[in-house]
Image (spheres, rainbow, N blue to C red):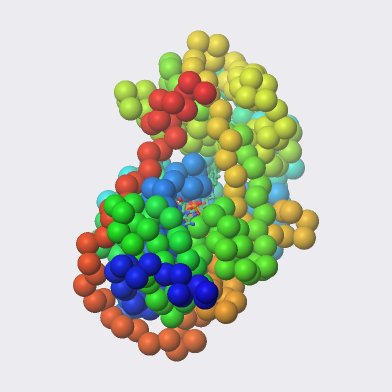
Length: 403
Ligand SMILES: Cc1cc2nc3c(=O)[nH]c(=O)nc-3n(C[C@H](O)[C@H](O)[C@H](O)COP(=O)(O)OP(=O)(O)OC[C@H]3O[C@@H](n4cnc5c(N)ncnc54)[C@H](O)[C@@H]3O)c2cc1C
């Protein structure tokens, strides 16, 4: 019996140009761009939109300063240099996708440093990435967390906005909701044909000219189901930390410690009761994968207490979250320098590497598709599909605070 013989004969039929698997920032940005370019596109999501890495992201639209700091800014990673402006255009409703409804958490990301590090940063301040994009902040303009005489470091303002990940997902999904299907399972899968059970129980037999795998960590299972051995994926785990209760204000800042690697990256959100939450990443989260939850929380408390001794962190509520970054495999396991796509047998596999690089990825895939000359069927009206929910942000899930 062949795969197509096994397809459910009562299935509804659908023929599209492109099927995208995965409704994170990569899949949704691609959906928007490809639809506008005239392709008939269907996006399949098996959990909730944004449910993968996107909702866990710190929402920083990097322009490369972090990489300039670590001296790892290679020619290819310069692609990130243009990202803040591309996003700003979209935020103003004048870009390639309309993000005018996205919540801007902060117009700027701050960076603060310990006095010992400043002398070693002169080369960094002179680099192209940083020039004109980083301002020393006057003391009276310091974020509230640093308005204390005991603070001896310096604060810089980076030209990198910080965005609410939930509202990005919402803004990208809403105009294209009729092209999104919430699925329960994929029964049959080949490069250009699949049979799925939608979340509402409908069975669909779908053919396409190309598939795009934008399922983050889920790409590995899809590639396996297709019998493809490449591209290979790598996971780089993090143990992020959340803290709430008695925080002075929202903060969006990297701390540079003994080295130029961000020792801690703090972004902020609100829980369902409106309490301020600090969400902690950076080196703390990378090194935290070797710690138990208790050890990680204890380390985070010590770090913040050492960096801001004027605040009392012992009274606050803490939680930690394990989450993987999914990327194309690198020989040395390091972070890829840019976004990634590759096509093998009509299957395009993508990993954006960074939320900030989603526009770069979409542009590259679009250009690649234009070269392949597949016909565009135009924006035909789609039938009403099973509706995919939008994932909550981690700090808005009370269960995450109890674990
Ligand atoms: C803790 C953390 C902080 C980060 N902070 C930043 C930051 O500040 N700035 C930045 O630029 N980047 C950041 N990143 C990186 C960024 O979040 C990711 O690069 C980006 O979100 C990846 O998006 P994606 O769409 O490829 O994947 P995902 O967001 O993982 O989305 C994949 C989607 O596919 C769905 N899916 C899985 N399997 C299937 C299947 N079989 N069928 C259908 N759907 C499927 C999932 O449910 C999910 O919705 C951070 C990442 C992490 C983990």
